[in-house]
Length: 284
Image (cartoon, rainbow, N blue to C red; front, side, top):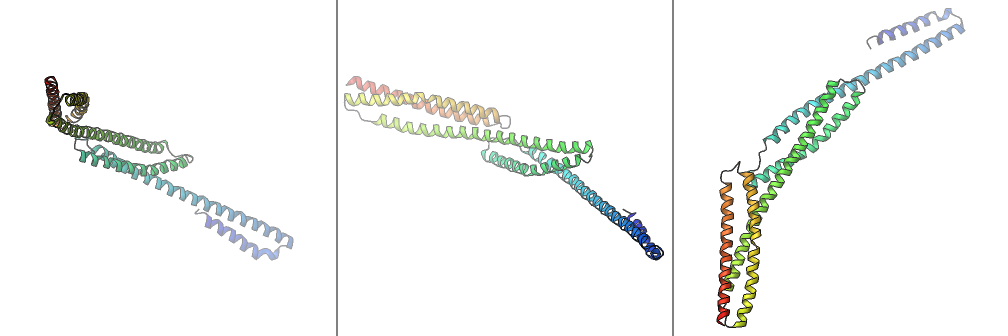
């Protein structure tokens, strides 16, 4: 582009020279030379425009390339930061409030990853443009690495979210069943108290009461399967948290033991009431 002013100067000098000497030439020769100069001027202007367009295109591509490299570096930094963040999120420790907080952190990170994926897609599209311009394999590989790191980060974050959701669901299932069984034990104890305190005055009333009580006794006996299921859930909790908690086994074992003892007491009471009712029936 530095020779353009020189070329422009030469054409101007040629025009000036023609103007000074044109009177010495015949008219037809003047027209012929003028047409040649005009063609030269037209061709020259076209060359200048083409050079200018090529330079502008080159500058545009250079700016796009610099922007691509800046975005690549920025995404590298962001990926490193989020990879560290994901690794810093600990495993659950059996505290439901903390586990829910950790899950929220993971979901927020997942949202950030999804938003950033748009920039990675744009980065890939830009690199596709530069492939046609002969970009180096090394630069193409750097973009591929970013794409793979983003994919891995997304997969690891999703896996951790799924693990936490499963962990929280299993924790809640155990605690909910524990509360349901405790509630059931209390309700049945009231029923047994009612059966035990009922005044019986004749044979028919005793037979009716025995039938009702045997239904309750059968219901109580079948309920042992719920306690067995609770125990299985409790053992899962122990297996998961014992590496991080020195008290989890004692805590859950005591909960199951108390539940089982309360149940055994109810069952024993129910059998005693049944025996008393049959004694009363025999008396009648």
